[in-house]
Length: 217
Ligand code: SAH
Image 1 (cartoon, rainbow, N blue to C red):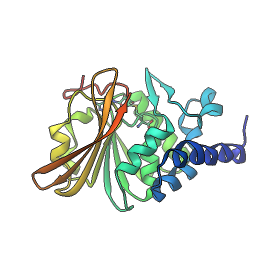
Image 2: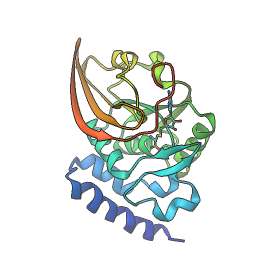
Image 3: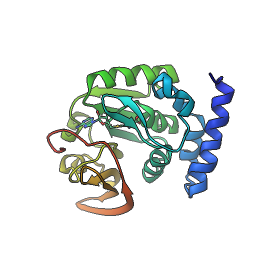
């Protein structure tokens, strides 16, 4: 079993090789991945491989994404550190913890109650229990009570861009990052809102577990 210093070494190595080494330079994203203890967000038996270059199972057929994918999505949000952010698909809570580290307040929706409970425990043990609120429910319905959001991140693959979520973006520059496409393969889309205009950028192909819900699969 590694100690904290051992995990820190793996973590810094991960950032250097997998994240910086592949061209992600957003300083806040790099700082967050360098500090947030990813090993505390995976089941105990996977801890030794928690900084490796692939996704890992977190139970119930779900996964914590590959570090590079998490970094790519975090950087795409272009956060300053004071934003109100909605996440759909809490999973382990790791992505939410990174956004909280950057200084944002995060509300994260998870449809599986067991995962939601585990994510709350993971977030508390890593020190992000206060900054992240985990809600159980169908995130494809959005969260009208707390809208608008400066940024929205969906961490499961959807058949289409959610109109609900677009409508909950802040009107002047709100950003939505979301994998959209088929069940097996999606495109990572970044949608930026200016009033009634939505500009979409495609960051390339990706593979996520399905978003299951009214506006999902
Ligand atoms: N962001 C996570 C990884 C998420 S995996 C992390 O950092 O670990 C995708 C998650 O989305 C799964 O936990 C799955 O249960 C959840 N999910 C799928 N459809 C959903 C929906 N409609 N609303 C909320 N959560 C959903």
